[in-house]
Amino acid sequence: MNLGERIYSLRTQKGMSQGDLAEALDVSRQSISKWETGGSVPELDKLIKLSQLFGITLDELVLDKQSEAAPPPPPEPKVIYVEKQD
Image (cartoon, rainbow, N blue to C red; front, side, top):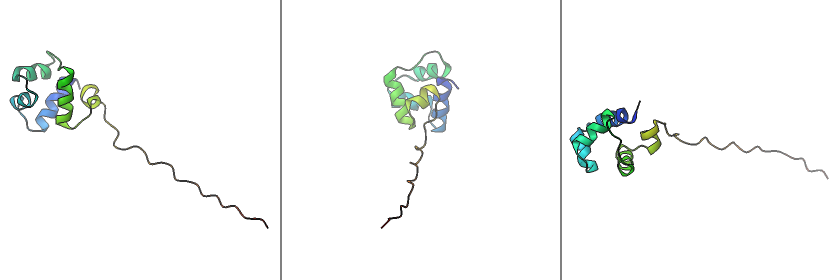
């Protein structure tokens, strides 16, 4: 999925129109249309706002990478019993 398709998908999942998204980002509706159709690419400040608005990382938005939910837990410590010699 390319960037435009991701923007379209995220926008429609939120139930937003192109006009709604344009208003939230302070751009024209035509800009949103161009982004979604691949006619242009949002500037960095708009990409940051998009990621914040949709609650995803820039990597998820731009590179379609899924963020790791949580790091794996640390290994459990091993307990070693030592007999005391008299």
